[in-house]
Every structure is written in C-alpha cells, then in structure tokens.
Image 1: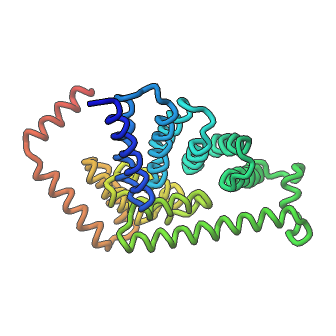
Image 2 (image 1 turned 90 degrees about the vertical axis):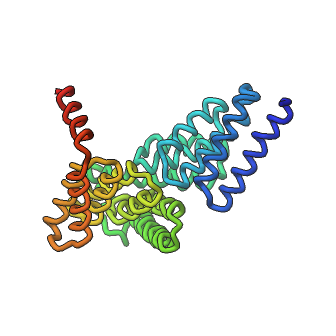
Length: 310
C-alpha cells in the first residue's frame, strides 16, 4: 500500500467523522476519529498538526456524549502536539467546568481569549467562573466586614452591581431549566446521547438540581454507560439523600455491573422511602432470584476470592 493511499484513508475517515458529528451521531463519530488517529499514527506519526486536530475532534464528540474524562484526555493530547490550539482549549475548559473544576476551566478560557479576544464562548465561560467564585466567597466567608458581602447585603434596587449579579444568577437558572426541558424532549424521542449533552449543559449553568443528574443517569443507562450512571445518581443523592429515581437508577446500573450487594442496598433504601414502589419490588425480586440461581461453581469462586483477600 502506497503512502498516498494511507494518507487518503485517514483523511477520508476524518471527513466521515465530521459528517457523523454534524448529524448528531457522536458515538459513531468517536469511533471513526479513533480509526483515523490509528491510521495517521501508522502512516505519518510526525504529522503533529493533523494528529492534534483529530484528537480535538474526538474530544468534541466525547464532550457531546457527556464523557468529560475522555474529552480531557484527548484535549491534553491535542495541546501536547500543538500548544494553544483554541478549539482544544475551549473543549477542555467545557469538560473541566462540567466536572466542577472551575479554576482549571477559567485558565483555559482566559488563555483562549488571549489568542482570540472575540470568542463569545470563552467570554461567557470566564464570566460564569467570576460569578461562581463570587457566590462561593459569600457562602464561605459570611461576614459584613467583607466588602463583597456588604455589597450582597445591600438592597438590589439600590446597588447596580449586586442587582447585576442577581440577574446573572437568575439567567443561569432560567437557562438551566430550558436546557433540561430540551433534554426531556430528546429523551421522549429516544435520542439519549443528545439528551445527555443537554443535561450536561444544564448542569453547567446550575449544578444543584438532582433532576438534571437523574435524567442524565437515565440516558447513560440507555447508552450502557453504567459507571457514569452510578456517578450521576451519587451526585443526585448528595443533593437529595432520599431521591427515589436516583436510588432506582443506581440500582439498575449496579445490576448491570453485577454489583449485587450495592444494588440490593439501594433498593432496600428506596423501599424504606416508598414501601409500595412496584418497580423497585420487582427489580429486587429479580436480583435476589438471580443470586439464588447462581451456579455453585461461581459461588465457590467468589468465596475463594474473599478468602484470598483476607
């Protein structure tokens, strides 16, 4: 196979990935970009610019799917190959923000603005960080000796700056609600990957509503991303410890991960809150029955494993 043919292969794969991305087929786009990266590594590993672009493109697909961990990995690889790639900086900032790593996100947003002062997304991201740290400062240091707290204590109509902060917070909350509703509509259509993206964006704006996390967990279950579903249910339960949907969906994820004890624990806790929840009762019976029907050899293996651990 000639080098020209190999070049054609990875370039065509890149274009195919771009088309999938444009039509919202983010999982397929991720797969194709991975093939393109592999082909380019084989044919011309010194082509750092195109490798950087491919990693950045795959990062965008991961971000759309709500897979922030993989997005961060690809952004880091892209920026190692070509430092100050603006798209990679913005995508890494968005992924960091989704994981509530606000300071890291802010640094990337500000770096992107130094490269291009007209980037709207970078301006908005930097402003969200400023607003976030403002409220954290007020919560952690509640003393009228602090000028920021004195500012927040003043009546909004008498203080333009405080009023602006209130309006910004209200706008974030409004935007989060709209994005969540968009996600709900996509779930009804069965578009779980796109819905997960909407819930992720909703969480960007307001990350203290359990429903956004339980809704995204539902999407992750449909996409068979069970570990991510467990994580989102945990986040929802940190907000509302008796959230029935979070307990049930985490139990579903634990069942798929074959973590039977954790599954039963969540279902029992759910039934303490809602003793007549038929879905939870049915799932608990299924899990307990599966455990009883487990082959004796498998049980012996597990008992031996436990002894070895001791």
